[in-house]
Image (cartoon, rainbow, N blue to C red):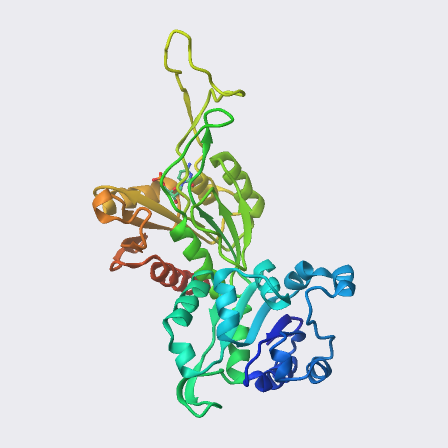
Length: 401
Ligand code: C5P
């Protein structure tokens, strides 16, 4: 259940706010403690007194409450919880979240947090169906925010359709899922992602075109199944997911150290595009043009192979998954790579420019294991990530029950 979990509950200004009082009670029955935040509009629908009495905790309302700033501060408040829940999430709150605004306590907490966020939208049907709200919904979901509801039904305003806030019991079920009660609960997974940067001198580097999109989606999908994720990322183009431990690195050598420091793990997924070579004679100072016009000579040294060293190292994760970006004879090369690196699975894809996969939104992969090759249809990188996370959950459940 939710024993020992701390939920920061933001109550927005909608008629559904009365259901949030019931939500507080059910969350507490499930073992969670609730720290309530009431927006200015929320306080028009439920009183601070009933919220704090039910929660058994002071209700926070104002960003500029100096006592709170001295005692705790809005940053700590946003991070001390295990999960932020917004119920009801009004159209206005969703718009603020989508735009990254921070003009009151609730929106500031939502922007400052490093924890996962679950919203339960509630509004008039037309407001929900308005393209602006749907656009904001897509934006916040893209940022990793989870959504429960809204349900269709009769509304307080007399109209009918989607817009009713999810029932408190449904919200609690979503809270349990968001807090990692899934099939990977209690499992530690290391995910590497993004490119590496190998310095030439203090201002120049060698890199590759990896955006980190697939690795980021995989980390998010594993998190959604309840895993504790350590996300070791090179300088990627996409931001890291919420609700995972992020370790930022630049070079392959740093990535190896970060991965080793994160062990032991049940699963390692190495989706990073690690540079095979680094510059052995990288300059301590910026390289200057030679007066005779000669081009500098870079010498290369081989980088450590992180995947191979994790696959053959101790302690070895029970399941090690590597990636193979190929431009021809994908299955053949990837099958050989699986054996060479000593990993359990290789997720292979064709990154030749015609596929548009490198840096694109979709991926078409073949998963190679001892059992052979599974060809998956082309789909969104998020869909590949979800399917891979499910496969990992099934496998690890069988390997280490
Ligand atoms: O050999 P190649 O780079 O094609 O292998 C790709 C796989 O190996 C990926 O899983 C990548 O993360 C991993 N790799 C690594 N360390 C390297 C090179 C690749 O972990 N130095």
